[in-house]
Image (cartoon, rainbow, N blue to C red):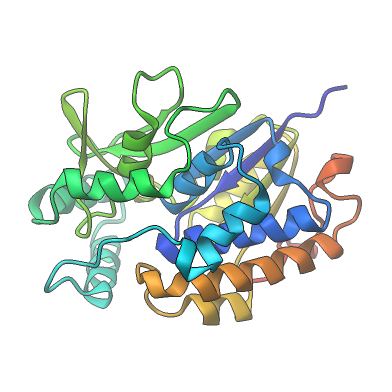
Length: 295
């Protein structure tokens, strides 16, 4: 019987891109090639990592592009007056004031449309620099975004008629930080507005590996949905990785320490795996299904 495997990569800023790349490189070096998944779903930072998997570059090179300052792409700094702490407080306040998930998405989208940020073109250039290849890969790849006008989520793929750079730029368009991306007469924002990983969108696969720095409140329910169909394992940042990422995951200076910590964690996770991804058994953790990181 053919076992269908899905890899889910969640959000986490530039630090999340570096950490997830490190984890995947560490897993691969220990013999667990998560890129062999039949389908990859990326959200926000995870969309950039997911897109890179189809570039043809080796794990060593993808890791070097995150860990080596000389190989890192140029990133934009946050606009004057933009504070990550204030933004985090705003999102928490919105969540507390808005128990309805659909309405909360709409309010976050409204924030994205109201705040003045850098020009779309400048932000798109940064995303283009992150991706070694701007063509959609032949493999199954989905990029999660949210329509800024309706709050409805969408998954772009190679059949959506959307350029890969635009899809990733939209999925990484953090409300209040980066501009919504104009695609086909509408504007789209960060897929993380719906969920940090959107893991439930790959329901139906026999094996699912979720890699996300921080498990948001929706993750346990999403994992429960996935477990109705197959086996699920989750890798979240352990203490060393959290320390490397620090308090500002949007700070480009976090890339080198986050990548190195992710690599070490990936190696450790693979070493503890029972059978591993290559044996059609996703890396085994504790009874809760997590390899490292917060429970």
